[in-house]
Length: 185
Image (cartoon, rainbow, N blue to C red; front, side, top):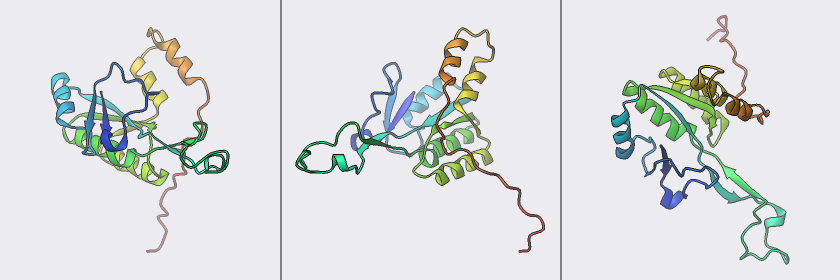
C-alpha cells in the first residue's frame, strides 16, 4: 500500500512510480497510519513491515536556459530537460510511521537508500532515532535478498540484475567515531 501526503496541495505520486495495482490513500497526518491503512493492517496483522518513502515533486531549476528571454518567454513552462526532484521524507513521515508501528509491536525495517530528507543531517539523525527505537535500518539490496532468502528463488535472477549497476553516492556514508573517554568536560 502507499500513502500520499496531502495530494490536493502537494500533488499526486509521480507516474514513474507505477502504483496501478497498489491501494493509495491520501493523508494529511505525517504518519501513514491512517484509518484506511489501519484497516489493512488489522486485516493482515503483519508482524513485520518494510517502509520507504521519497516525496518527489518536480519544480524547475533556476537554469539560464529556463529563464525568461527572447527565446523563452516568461509565460512558457520551464524546459522539461531541466527539472529538479525535491526529496523530503525520512525525518518526518517515515520516522513517525516507524515509531507508531513500533509502539504497536510491529517489527519495522526501513530502506535507507529508499528514503530521503530535505537535508542529509535530518535523514541520518532520523535513522539514529529509529535505531534507538528498535527499527532495523538497511539498504534496498540487503532487504531484497533477505526477502528472497535463497538463490533458488524464482525471482533471484531478476533481482540480481536490478542491483548489478553501481548506484550513485546517496549520502549515507559517514565516519563514525567513538567518543573520547579521556576528554575533559
